[in-house]
Length: 158
Image 1 (cartoon, rainbow, N blue to C red):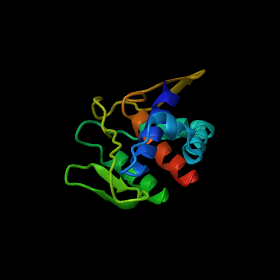
Image 2: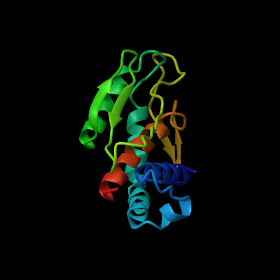
Image 3: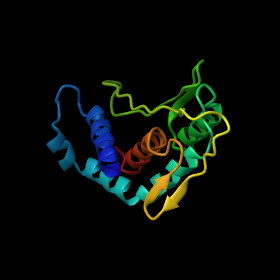
Image 4: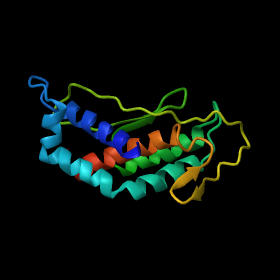
């Protein structure tokens, strides 16, 4: 499931850079060498994506108090070379990655907060390949995939 989410994110992101006048099919995209390269980059960096997922999750983000996790994401987006990195008045972190043309635009999003109250132990525990912790699957994976998609697109020069 993790790889599928990342593959879908990469395919959708690649579709956004396709020429707006020539719609591409998923099959055509999956045959494109830069998309194949991005998917391979995502596969080979999956351990790093898991580590990011854990790192993001271990920053407390109770409802309406997700500023610390937002700052971690802001720094990550800057490190990835994304542009116009900023926060809005309610704490969302927004960044842009230029494509081959200014349109169409694609939004990939994940939420920062968890439903767990302030003071919850956010330590992630491992049992084999299973990760357990508050928000590890719902939102921390999404945040890690946002970063992984940008990293893979950068690495493959999509």
